[in-house]
Image (cartoon, rainbow over all chains, first blue to last red; front, side):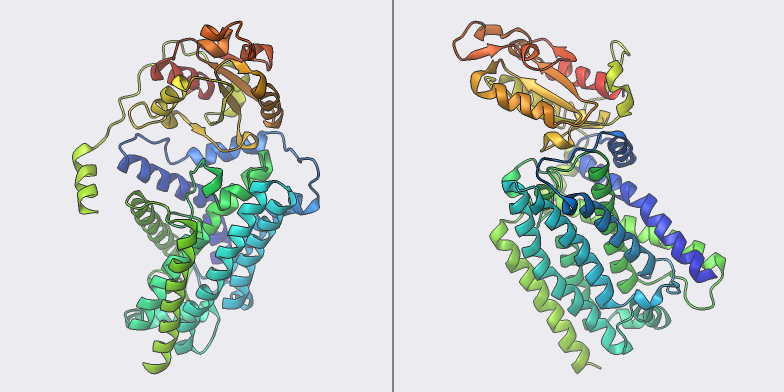
Length: 314
Length: 161
């Protein structure tokens, strides 16, 4: 029962909190740039307005274009339900497998890339090709870095990995964890399209990755995509926090109080990571597109070292 | 990086305090947008004077973003078109099509004297007419170029904040 409540509460928390996280990150950036900022609730205002607007289906687009936002939002919601963020006792624990979660995230990205291609515009195709390039380099790194952590547990179940880290906190401070954490942090930035891989607030079509794919979406469809992108960011940041700072997560035998504590811990951890990421973005410029594979290859190398270390140090 | 951090610490907040709105009127058609207006800027043949002023309206000092206005990259994402300059022959179709690409409810802001009545370019051979001759205009901002304060004031009339 606690598991069910925990799973529902983490979906609700991710669904409601993600736009606020996006607002918080924009606000941090605005303050560091000397601006006043639009306020933390601005992404929710944007979503409310977009949901009321007229949906437009451009000429020549088909069901792929219509379906992509739904698939994207659906996969993120499923991931939010199964990944151990508030509790490790999700009733859908069987799906919380490393490979299943990575594949679900990839399914969402591929759906959106196909949606971008379906418009037939130059920028849609360009954005889709770039997104798939980045994804092809990111997915192996996610798999490898979490795999490095799963070696000592002997299971690829994310719940089992986090449970073992909760029971033995010193495990977190090891060369394996450190290497995997850096690799996973880099791919989180790449996967969610933040600086230095992609600039979420760019107006230059030639430098866009994520934005270029969604240029043709409008109204409720666009609202769904922006909401799903914010949720992806918070789920990945939450996963990062759960794997490398698993304090406060409700484990087996925990009561309702532990779930509430887990929710508070999740909010604090994800907000702290978000603030850190936004502050880091102020100090950095976007990388040239052809330099991105180098960055991602570096993170893949770290993940590979983490796996090697987990075998030799075990 | 340390140098940049020191600069941030030393500079602090650049944005000027939000001025009181002269007339608390909100453009009626913008009321349902609820404090969030995405804007697509269309240069229909401007001399770039207005663009410089738009850039400073969205810069740190005037910070139009704090009132809920934001420039976006696609007319499909937009609620309002911000049109500058007299409409030239080459931009007439482009302007019409960008206007059609904006989902309802859509608004048009004609920025600067050229956009309102062709200004210095009235009667020139390459000019079709003012913005209102091509697409319906909801808000006009006078000036050549209009100062950032006037642009921010007009945008606040759309966002109602």
